[in-house]
Length: 186
Ligand code: HEC
Image 1 (cartoon, rainbow, N blue to C red):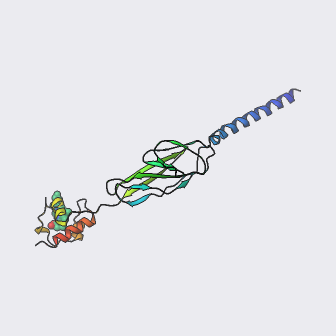
Image 2: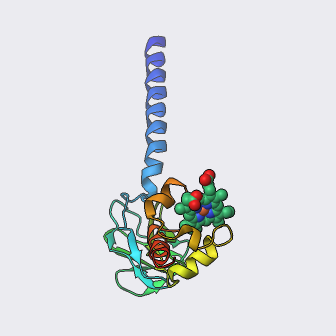
Image 3: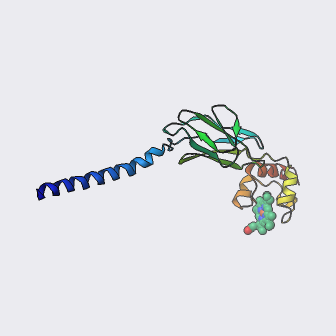
């Protein structure tokens, strides 16, 4: 009899441990708010200060029909129902796309982060590199004339500027304008 009682006790303990272990792992799944990772296609070469809209992603892997959704900047849209920046809820199979205004500065990235349940993803745009409206002479006067006269550098080539590390933070296109200008001076 004692043996049977002991066996019953052991079985009960095993069952309790198994049940506890199971319920604690199930608890995580039961929230149902962990979607599959989602990827937005980042945009490069974007025009400055322009509204940029992402591709659509379809939310998969969540069972909770009230999974929280929020955005840190810009706005998001569920199922083409209008863009909003206010946090809301989403359910499996719905689509999402994002929108933000690109930077007003050239070569600058704006990144927005969307969070659905326990998973976050980003969408970014990077604006085009600036095209200078300054002439070679203006660029020379602002970047070089404090140390050189134009005539002392007459006929200077891009290679000479590079080999003397005289780029002074200018782009190759801007340096080319200076070279063009220096080709015209005596
Ligand atoms: C802060 C001063 C300064 C500025 C600004 C500057 N340079 Fe120079 N540069 C020098 C000095 C000093 C040398 C001589 C370096 C040496 O020989 O070690 C030099 C050398 C050069 C040379 C080699 C030929 C020579 O005359 O010795 C070129 C070409 C040149 N600079 C182009 C430029 C251009 C183009 C700019 C503008 C984008 C510029 N530099 C801006 C100080 C300057």
